[in-house]
Image (cartoon, rainbow over all chains, first blue to last red; front, side, top):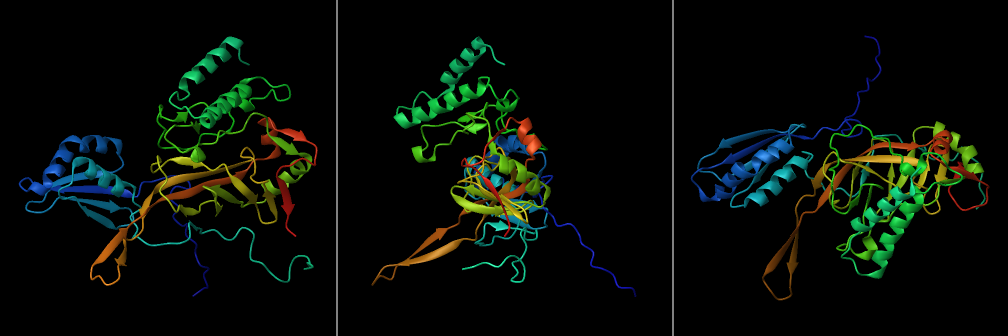
Length: 137
Length: 255
C-alpha cells in the first residue's frame, strides 16, 4: 500500500467568515393542569410568538408534558442538548432562560483561565538559540 | 463641501441630541469636545481635500447578518461611537475618536509599511478594558466578563492596539497605534458560563456552613480579520506624511 500523507481537514471556525447560531432547536414543554406551569403557559401565549419571529433560524417546538414541571430544552449543532427547568417562573424570567439557551454555544461548561485559544501557528515562530544576532547583556 | 447653513443645522441638531440631564462639568466638557471634534472634522481642511473626514473609521461594510438597530439610545449614529451618558461613571465614559486632524505618518514608517503589509499572517495586541489580548485571524476569545449590549452575530471593531506585527516586523504604538492604520474585527458568537462554583463559608465554633454560589457568564468572540492598511490606502484616506522625529508608531524589524 502506498504511503499517504495526512489529509488536513478544515477546522470549524464559526464566525470568522459566516456566522451560524449554534442553537438549532428549542423545545418548550408545559402542563395544563399543574400550577408550576402557569408562568410557562402565559409565556407560550404572550411572549413566544415574538421570540420565534425574532429568531427565524431556530426551530421551535411546543408540546405538553402532563404531570411534570415545565421545561425548555435547547438542541445544538454539536449534538448536545441543554435542558432548563422553569417551574414556578414568571414569563419574563422564562424569556431570560430562552435567551440563555439561544446564545449558548452548546459546549459543556468548562472553567478556563486563558482568554484566547488559537488554532493558528505562532506568527513569530519559535525562538531558536542558533539564529539571529548575538546580543550583549 | 458643506454650506454654512447646513453646518449650523448640524450643530443645532447636535446640541439637541446632547444629553441635557447632565450637570457635572467634565461630562459637559466631554460632550462639547465631541461636538467640537465633529465640527472641525466636517470643516474643509487645507491639506486633505479627500473624503477622509466623511468616514473616520473607513470601515467597509462586510457580510453582516444582523443590522444594528436604527435608533439606539446613547449611541451617536454619525461617528458610530457611544455617546456620553449620565448613568455611567465619569471614568468609564466612552472616548470620542480624536479625528480632529488627519492621520500623520512619518516618512520612515511609510517606507517600512509595505514590508509589514506584505508579510502575512499578522498578529495584534488589542487592548480591551486595559487588558492585552494577543490575537490572530480566526482566534477564539472568551472575554473574562460579560459584555453588555451585544448579542450573538454582532461585529465589533477593536481600536486600541499596542502592537501589530508579522513574523519579522512589529509596529509599536506610543502607547497605542492609531486606529486608522489597521482593521481588527471580531464577531460575537454567544455567551458562555463557567460551571457552578460552591464555596463553603464557615465561622468559628459554629456548625452552620454557608454555601456561597457563583456562576459567571462570559462573552465569546471570534476574530474575523487582522489587517494592516497599505500606504496607498492610507494616502487615499487622507493620511499626511510628516518628517521623522515626531512621536508616533514605529516599525521595528526583528533583531
